[in-house]
Every structure is written in structure tokens, then in C-alpha cells.
Amino acid sequence: MQARLIVCPLFLAMAFMATVRLLSAQPDRHPKVVALEKSDNGIQPILNGPPETVSMKSGFVVLNAGHSVGKHSTEHHEEVLVVLEGSGEMLFRDGSKLDLKARTALYCPPETEHNVKNTGTTQLRYVYVVADAE
Figure 1: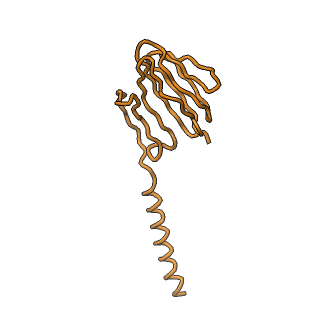
Figure 2 (figure 1 turned 60 degrees about the horizontal axis):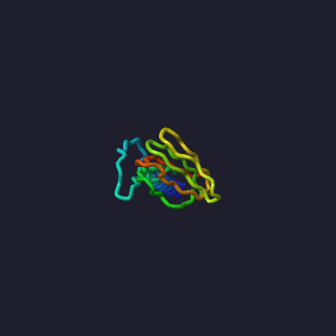
Figure 3 (figure 1 turned 135 degrees about the horizontal axis):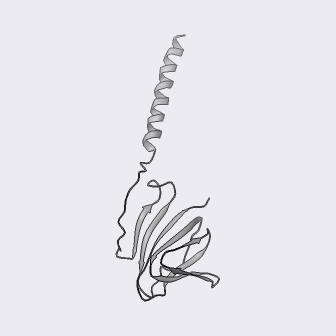
């Protein structure tokens, strides 16, 4: 009987400590506002992914006329672009393309190699959002 009294408080203390560790490991996700400003390289992060978000990352991109972001793949993410200003193209590995223009949104599925190019005469400004698709 005496052994049970020693084990029980020990078990409760261990369970309490595990709960405290688990709760302290939980990320502090909260609403926020981010001003959209052009950065030195033309890409300003908005959301940086975990632990700030569950899986979402996003950024604000400003491309000068004739410039592109460079070929890249969505890998295991899906992506949406929301065009705020300007015009351009999303170019794909197979040679196909989608036109970008202000007040449009484009979806790019996982495992898709693409590039975004400003084909207009003014700056192309858009927000991208990516999230895990798995």
C-alpha cells in the first residue's frame, strides 16, 4: 500500500511536467498586420511558415519591367498568386503560360516548375501564398 502512494504522486508529477512541456512547445500563432513594402531584392516575406503558421508561407513581390523571379518548383506546395498591379506571365516548363494582370488570381498546383515574368511597362506587384499540399 505504501508503494502505491509513492508511485501515484510521482506519476502525477511526471504527467504534469509533460503537459507543461507540451503546452510551452505550442507555437504562439496570432493575427497580425504586415505593411506591404518593396524590399531590396523585390520579395518581402509576409508569413514565414511554422511556427508562425501551420504550413502557410506568403510574400509580396515587386518586379520591374522585363524582370522575372526565376524558375522554381512548387514542390509539395500549392500556390496562389494575387496580382495587385501590372501585367506579366506565369511560364511553365512545357512552354505554356498564363497571363497575369491586376485584380486576377492564379493557382499553381504542387510539383509544377514555373517562372513569373513582368511583360508590362510598369512594375508588376503581387502577393503569393503557398501551403503544404500533403
